Image (cartoon, rainbow, N blue to C red; front, side, top):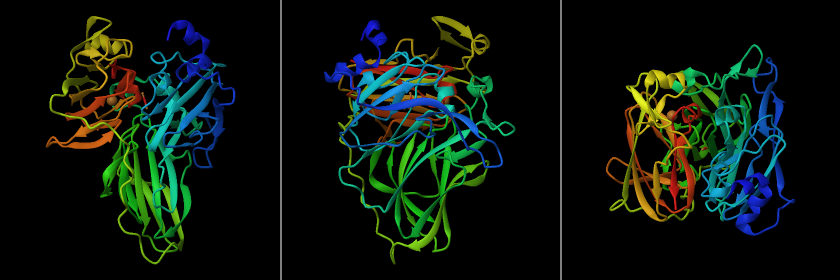
Length: 458
Ligand code: C2O
Ligand code: CU
């Protein structure tokens, strides 16, 4: 794609891969500001930015293998773009401003047109000035349905977020570049909500089975989720089914950008209530309350059968190309100096530049040299060493990877892996999707202050 084509805007780009003319018929997805009642009613309304003026944006649904066609219409005061997180997508449609497309200026449009090859729970979000635009509410769920619907009674799409809001004005804190957020755990909010609703409540029946599609859309928060009056199985992570359903256990950690499909059976009595809880400061806050008003059946169903697998090439660890990523920096880290713009700068100087994190000794930025240039079809293992005091949620665009277990066994396929401080995580994948793929921390303040790189696949 040359610069002129970029300037021509979406129509030309979208037409290129498919050979179609500009589809004026594609439905719009309009990014714009709106006011919504985010906080409890005694507070005022909050100005958000949302797709179609809602937060979360509309739930987009397509069958597996189906085509998503949407025209982004930008009615914001800022340029924007849409990234389709977790989709093994055509690179030109990946929506990364400054990498796979030019940001869409206010008043502009861009036609997104791609096929969704894998069934599962995905999401879309703004990918320009993400720290700000995601914090303002520019995201929504993208659901790719299995050809054969699994055996559940109900489905709940739950987009979780925490908001940094000044209760006096009910407005979103607009210090998006706060040094403390960049250098510590990222931008964490003071108010959490599911689907933008405080105390979301739904009717339920005893013994029914519900599919919870849980999406962590927060800028930085790691959600610790618990069940009450529900008994569940984790069926999929980041859209990709587990070979065997995994008992929910005590809690589930979901880093920013990550998703889980959880099947839950309502075990609370009729007239009682059940909850999906998020633990915040040691306190379990209800994200969804299920009012149990009737009974679906006398007894519960048996164990769920696994979701139908999405076909991936099996990665071979033997002979795989070995890559390493050493992550350093942040507050309470030992980083003394790192490279920025080809110059070696002391940590003090980096702090002045608002940069705090280094990948393999250099401040990681999209415009710098890639972490790796891979041949198409190469098998890769990547060792990520988190030598910082904070957890990070590393997200690879365009491809899913396996987490490798301690014993060398292939763990679940994911697109975002959560790595705690002083932890090392090895991942492995087949570089089967050509393009220029971002690889960054989904704690968005970190991505903007040194934790961004990319992987090129020829
Ligand atoms: Cu969900 Cu590059 O992001
Ligand atoms: Cu991070």
